[in-house]
Image 1 (tube, one colour):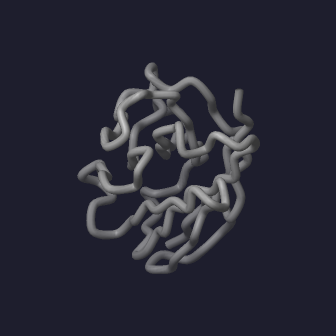
Image 2: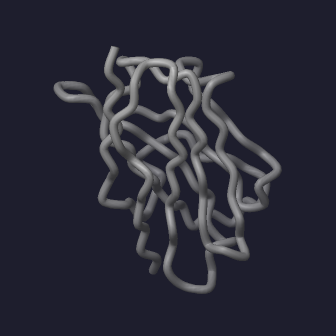
Length: 127
């Protein structure tokens, strides 16, 4: 089992940047494919980005492609989400998730496939 703790959220103006972190407990972080999702008020949770266990493969939603970058440090048990050129439409609670997949180079896009979730961190972008 793994516990996930997100940090780095906050309030920024449009055009600004934030870097989210998701720290995982335990010694088996490299066994998990990781992803970031977000949920805005009144909307369903949506996939935004994922990274494979190896870190070689990444997948991005069209809405964040070119602005957000996911990375992971398996030695530090942490996955990062660098968010640039933020807009008010990015305002949401951001969640990281872990999937205990056997696939080393595969990203996981579906929320239902993830086994563990963090508590979320709020990101608010003002115009």
